[in-house]
Image (tube, rainbow, N blue to C red; front, side, top):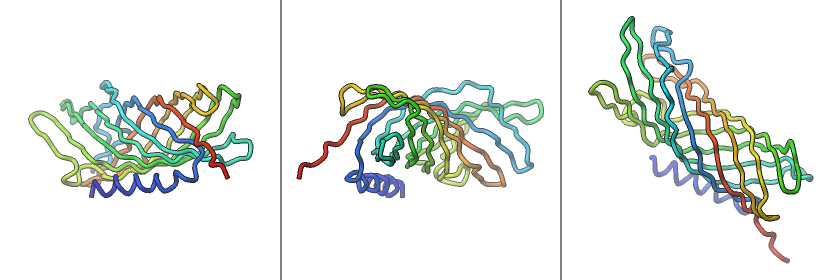
Length: 217
């Protein structure tokens, strides 16, 4: 099942490549945390004051010109990200540390709009929607190790919305370097025993964009 999800996402992206004007590859540095967790009694027992480790991710995709002046573009991409989350469950006066290791494959899509549109420099606002599929997940606390992909302890599929800014600097007329900030927020997901949570991720992406050359008639 995991291989099929990754394979279908890859070929979905490849299928649109022939219509795109730009190809990009990127790496990301991300930190994640759980937000608005509620247990089966409707109470938030998670302590999010712990540090959020930064993890490396990779991605790539294609960009389409939407408007005639090329200020509005559409992005379609696929990413692989790992997140580590350190938190603790608080019950009464007792706090139990717990550690999550999560790996997701994500398919995202959304617009870019150039707030500043110069020949060599562009400042772009972006907004995306994405689906994240959990390919690996574990939870460790005290002497326990739980495989989160083998049961129902965590939702395997998350739907998210993103927003952020990107600074694009052109190296040549066809190739550019960019740095982008992205804030990702999942919609509320449910797990067993009527528990629910949201997963939030802050990321900085560094990447390169390559324009496709038009075919000669």
